[in-house]
Amino acid sequence: GAGVSQTPSNKVTEKGKYVELRCDPISGHTALYWYRQSLGQGPEFLIYFQGTGAADDSGLPNDRFFAVRPEGSVSTLKIQRTERGDSAVYLCASSLDSNNEQFFGPGTRLTVL
Amino acid sequence: EDQVTQSPEALRLQEGESSSLNCSYTVSGLRGLFWYRQDPGKGPEFLFTLYSAGEEKEKERLKATLTKKESFLHITAPKPEDSATYLCAVQAYHSGGGADGLTFGKGTHLIIQP
Image (cartoon, rainbow over all chains, first blue to last red; front, side, top):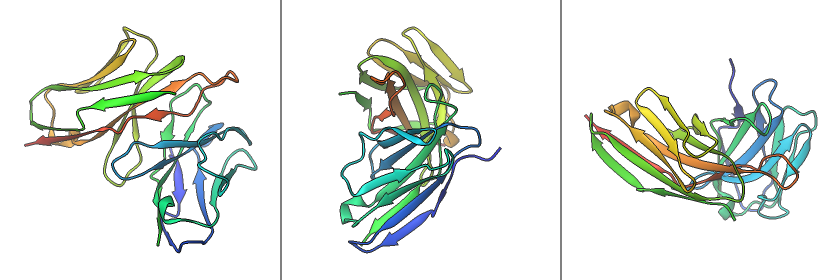
């Protein structure tokens, strides 16, 4: 079956611009997670949705980062006033619920010039 | 704060040479320990979940074990296609009753030479 998909696969933007990254989870998965991975590091947790609500957003680095999941399926990670330090691979994962293994998408590589 | 430390950072083996990767962790209330494989330019691929000390799981040439402080990923007679970065992660119980996001280690970069 179809796995987690993320678009775009690559995004290059200029410092100060706004970007949106999209995640399509596996059908039927109620839990959705966003992570950020820098070169040579493991993924770093950002935010977790159970259904439509953000159950835990403690990993968001600051108020420039925001995520939504309005219908409990597709999620969008939004970054305002991008900075060069935001450059990383943004990974999305989904699971049946929070008590099951997470399956990751291929990621979106964000480059802020 | 949950912490995961993986060692070694990198490991180069000859094809057929068995070895083990280590994952040491500290967590407030372990719900599960996870092993993932990550190939360059791709997202992590799920391998195993371990829930309690003494548990073991196997898949092909890989075997994962868990104690109260660490987990090992044993690789037996590896092949070049086993080359990848292996990531260990822990998940704690959330204060609200659910489960937290995963806390990952930096990974072990494994190279198997033919």
